[in-house]
Structure formats: C-alpha cells, structure tokens
Amino acid sequence: MVINNSLKGVLEGYAAGDISLEEAELLIGGLRLDMIGNCAKIDTGRNIRCGIPEVVLAENKDLPHLLSIVDKITQTNGRCLASRVTPAQAEELVKFAVEKGCIHEYNPEGRMFIMTRDEKVKARCEKRTGGIVGIITAGTSDIRVAEEAKVIAEEMGCVVKTAYDAGAAGIHRLFPAVRDLLDAHAFVVCAGREGTLPTVIAGLVDRPVIGVPVSVGYGYMGGGEAALASMLQSCAVLTVVNIDAGFTAGAYAALIANMACGNGDNSRKSASDRG
Image 1: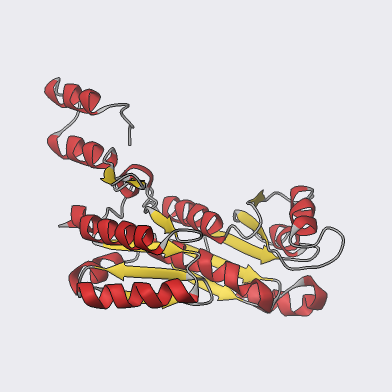
Image 2: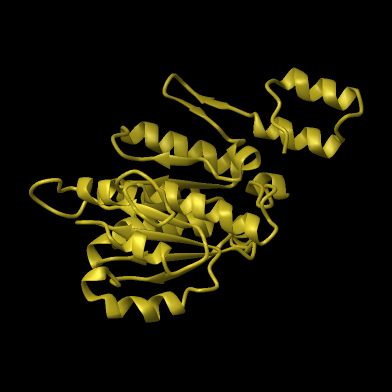
C-alpha cells in the first residue's frame, strides 16, 4: 500500500478521486497514534501499515505503564502482544486480564503474553493466511528464542512448524528435521555457541533462511557473539538478525511467507478493522 506522509495527504487523495473511501479508511487507520499520558505513543495502525502488529516490549517497563499500554492496545485493536515478559509481570498481567474480562495466553518459554478482548476477536486473529514458517534450533537452550519467533509468526497468520535440537554437533539429526519442514516458505534457524546451523540449512534449502544468534556459549566470544560473527561470515546466502532477536526473525519470516502465498498486502488487518 502507498504510505502517505500526513492525514492531509490522505484526504486530498480521496477528494481528488485518486483513492477510494475504503483505501482512505485503511490509510488513516495506518497513521493512527494513541497517547498514554507522558509515557507512551501507541502505534495502533502498525498492523494496517506494515502487516506487523504493535508488540509491547515488557522488558524494563514499570508495571503501571505496562498494564496501561496493554489495556489501550487491547481495547483499540482487540488484541495485544507483549514480549520479554517475566514470570512476575505475567502474574500481574493475568490478574489484570481476568479483571478486565479478557482472554489471556502466556508462553513462558517464549516469554510472550497475549491479551484478547473476546472470543470473536480471538477467532478472527487465529485465521491462517496460508503462509508456512519453519523454525529450527541447534540445541534445547535455543528454544526460548525460537518460541518468541513462533508466537509472532503465528500472530501474523502463518502455520509454524518446528524442529528443535537438530544442531551440527549431531548432524544426522538435521536431515529428517529439514525433510519435515520442506514446505515452509521461509526458515528461522536459531543457534548459539559457534552458530553453524543457519549456514548448513541455507546450503540445503531453496527458501529464505534467517539466522538468529542465541546468547548461549561461554568464555571468549561467548554470549552469542561468536554465533553472530559466524553467521555474518556465512558462505551460504542468509539473512542475520541480532542476538536473541526472535521477534524480528519471526516477523520477517512471516512477511516473506505471506507474500509467497499471495497474502502480502496487509491481508490480516487489526481486529477492530475486521469488524
């Protein structure tokens, strides 16, 4: 979709007959910002504009700020995701969702919390686009990052298939894992330590591969640094995101998958815009 720089541009385009009423409605929605006091500017139009929902980073947020932001997005769009949610924050978010009469889900491995206004919205958000994302981890320690990627890719309408603990240290584990994921439109591959697995996968499949270095490893270049360096120097063609950036990898893979199956033009509008 064409992104206008201002509300005035949208209105001028509609008045001139260059865009329809429906297109103007989507564009105006995509430019929307909601203010929460002095603490936050909520981009409630992001899903329409970019095809990626607004996700709240819970990490380091004061609890009152976090609750008010989650509440605002849920009431406006019908649904809200929060990432990097601690167990203590999750406990408070669950209490808050119950008080509000909202549906809630918490993925402790991926540290993702979802709050939904009602069952009608939940059913609409769970519709699939036809996109398929494959997620592979080198080891069990990488699953927390993979689950973060999984939640956002599913939220963007994709079916997600996973194969965990299939790293290069036991390379014979990899081939049956890849075979089961060959219908994926894009792959997310999470690996710590020396970060070899994304390069291996990229040399086996004819689909985009996104490497995620994970902060697993110790000593010199530990904490994901060696994995990041290794992926950046890959001799195979792959995209690399930052250390532990499961959200970024999952969202990027979902955009690719949705485009590959013909659903890349903001097919999954926010809950409020789907009626």
